[in-house]
Length: 164
Image (cartoon, rainbow, N blue to C red; front, top):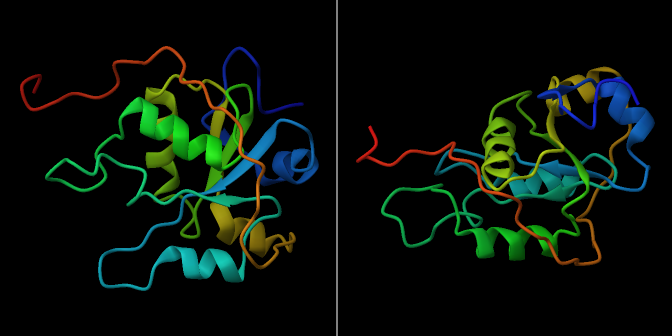
C-alpha cells in the first residue's frame, strides 16, 4: 500500500488510500471529533454519519480524570482498556479523522504515539474532504469486538510543568 510505510507511518493518509484500504484486516478507523464545552457532543454527529467501520474516541472520557485540567494523557492501563474496547489492537494500522478537517484528530494521533503505537496516521482533510469526494458514510455506532490492547514502549513526547 502506498502512503503508509511499515517503517515510518506518514502523519497524513490520503482519502484515496483509506477508501481502498478501509475494509482490509488490521485497518481501524477512529472518529476523534470533539466540541467545545456548551456545544452538543460530537458523538451525536458521529451517530448520524461516520466513516464505515469507524469507532468514536471520546477525548473527554479517555483522559486523566484525576487531573485538574481537561484532556490530560490517560494512564497507560486506562488507555489500553478504552482502546481495546474499541476493537483496536496493537498491530492495527489506525487512521484517525475528525469532522472539522484536522482539529482534534491530531491530538488523538499524538496520544497514540505517546503510548507507543507506531502505525497511526491522520486522514488528510478529515470528514469534510471525504464527503466532498462523495465517499460513503453510515449511521449509528459501531459494535466492535473488544480485544486486548498492549501499550508499546512509551515515548517521552509529553512534558510536565517542572520540565518546562
